[in-house]
Amino acid sequence: MATLIKGGTVVSSTGADPADVLIDGEHIAAVLRPGSHIAAAAEQGAEVIDASGRLVVPGGVDVHTHMELPFGGTFASDTFETGTRAAAWGGTTTIVDFAVQKTGENVRECLDAWMAKAEGNCAVDYGFHMVIGGVDNDSLKEMDLLVNEGITSFKLFMAYPGVFLADDGQILRAMQQAAGNGGLIMMHAENGLAIDVLAEQAFERGETSPVTHGYVRRKELESEATHRAIQLAKVGAAPLYIVHLSASEALEQVAMARDDGMNVFAETCPQYLHFSLEEHLGRPGFEGAAYVCSTPLRSRAEGHQDDLWRGLRTNDLAVVSTDHCPFCMKEQKELGLNDFRAIPNGIGGVEHRMDMIYQGVVTGEIGLARWVELCATTPARMMGLYPRKGIIAAGSDADVVIYDPDHRWTISVDNHHMNMDHSAYEGTQVTGHVDTVFSRGRKIIDNGQYLGRAGDGQYLPRGLSQYLQ
Ligand code: DUC
Ligand code: ZN
Ligand code: ZN
Image (cartoon, rainbow, N blue to C red; front, side, top):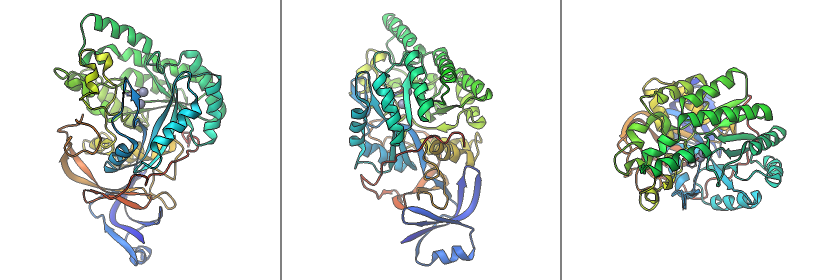
């Protein structure tokens, strides 16, 4: 049966207008002017949902998640099943996760292993980027094959020496390869060698608490790496996408490159906009461990958060993703009780991205259309999924969220759906609430109930990045 979502305000990256949305099967059949005879005719034989007073937005597209990531001797606590279900609760209907290859490992075998983890388990549609942790002749060749198979973006690390770090020569080679095959290089831009020196020195001085993580991962080491990545991208003639940018100084580097006309893009994450080094990472005792992630949270006194909101307005930051990488406090974050270096890096937030960025609409930092553009349309385009994802338009997948813009509620570990024993957002009061979620035409969240099943989500082979469109 068809579904007609009637009386709502449909939001796209260009504006918000009253419209009725007709879903037929897995696709959007039409976006209709309310009161038109076509809209009236569509009501016949359709399930009619009254969306009056509510926003009708494209399902969120989160292009940076880490379900089940092995990290620091443990695994991110959300499986593809629990993490994608939590995404659905938060109005995100597409994720792009990271399959991981390390030095000496075979890219293809690694990808197969990650595909197997996800297959049959996801609540929403999913794709993969490939982490190339070991750039060598084999992995470079494999990049060409993967691009043709729908893995069109590759993450490199300038951090985590001995685990993921690629040196400048390897980075340049991977960029040249991407320039040839059309792939997009995603960069974790922090100078990991310098960070490790500072971390060891701090530990030897007896500074063991979580906040030290933020002090040693200095903003200069993020901006230096961002600058270096941009210069290497210029030499390699490749487009570049900086992930989880948190420092004003790194943003300046991106802005300069963009002003220069380079194809340099960047994302930030809700935690960098809403949290700070002083108020969160610096919490007493071991509490700050919940906020250990890399890049780290930055100082509010230095104004990074305000600069990031500005970057979202100017488009120097084009995407908001979560870097969802949850770890429980018990037995996971606690691995670093006596040494901040052993705290697994990551914050769980896949469920809260749409709401936390909507708070920017509430406070006037961004408009409604920009909210949708940052959380759905641009990530879909950046990662080669548009217009199948990221827009409510005839022919697109019927991934639709009915959003109550006025509903006020408080985030808590007691009401979230991520597999974590705490919430980094505990006690956060938000305005705005995901009421109903459709994934490819199937109602999977409604009335406070999850109606979907593991395995509803399909694998998404992706096209080349559409960043130039
Ligand atoms: N940063 C994190 O916080 N977690 C996983 C990997 C990363 O780069
Ligand atoms: Zn990273
Ligand atoms: Zn990440």
